[in-house]
Length: 123
Image (cartoon, rainbow, N blue to C red):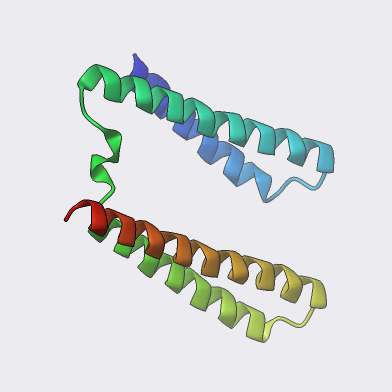
């Protein structure tokens, strides 16, 4: 039953993520962000319960190779966003793209640090 709920929560998150980009009303966007935040908490709680029942850690899939793949994807995303920035004409779009690029750089640094931590724990 927990697995079914976990899957349902993930589906709901994906729906909310898809909706978020198309909603213009700030109140509705705020509600969707709340739903996203709560959904993430629910997934964490359910994952913890499943791990406790199964007697294994869900973080076992958190490997250096997996993190390196994530870093690769973040860098790819950053490059695509940089290309979009270079061809954008509107200042508002350039500003938003700059913000996302900065976030992507931050994600890369976080992932690189996570990789260092995992490698140090595995020694």
